[in-house]
Length: 364
Image 1 (cartoon, one colour):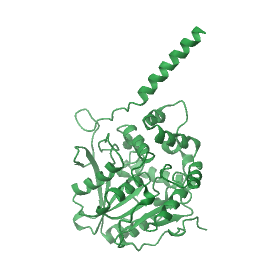
Image 2 (cartoon, helix red, strand yellow):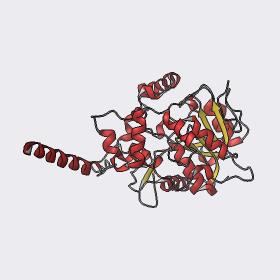
Image 3 (cartoon, rainbow, N blue to C red):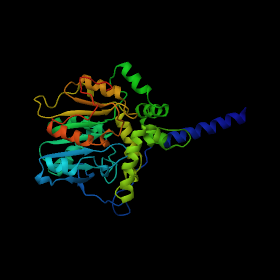
Image 4 (cartoon, rainbow, N blue to C red):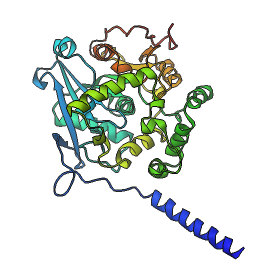
């Protein structure tokens, strides 16, 4: 009995020691000389002293009719870009495109105080540093969708239009019980556990994601089962070409560590928001701009039920739901062009099979 008590005590002490270490976030890797990770991108300095790395594309800024900031998704960087036709759309409309690494990703400094508001003000300060003018357009993809919502809430006066493309959702938003149950219940049990930890015990998330004893989230790990067969076909082809040409290094996204990139994303997305997206005010009451949500019905990462609920609550949002698409919706042929054309012109046609906002259901 005494021996058993000693074993129990040792185990308890070890468990407490692990828990203590688990709640202590690892420091981010240092960017820049001396002795730090190399910086290979142009950067701007923000008011708090941090730097954001960026990449420009499209027509010259001085010649542009439209200036669009693209916000990348989870485990990604500015180099992921956005599928827009250069000759058919970019040059035709005169589009300047700005991509940047979000805080803690790629060549951008980590932000230990990163939150919904800071992500929005990062966008605003980046635009000001590069002199984009009083207003600009924002496209938020996947995890970048929460940044787009933040921009709509915190800096609506700076926006000319917003597109939320397969935007990430928070299962702890004020949702009807049936919507929450349906959407959350579709997730793999390993994803549910991980998202629950991100919401209820965020200080343990990094330890949970890096431990090897128990299986973690297929979505976070980017496993094949998290995607539809069509998604996987599209994405593997997209990853193959840049990788073979040396233009894309997927490891660059988390080069500063998973805590400042992936874990921060998850704890912010699934945390307690300071605002309710379904109560958002229309930033364009006179119709001078467009806000759109683009969603694939087959998406296994972002559940369609929540997008439909948001669309019903916000009648001023244009909702497009493609019945055959998954999370790779913007990378389907021509869809990227349709997203940008509608954002800028307000007159683009939705992709074949999509549903208007007033009818957020699966197409035939």
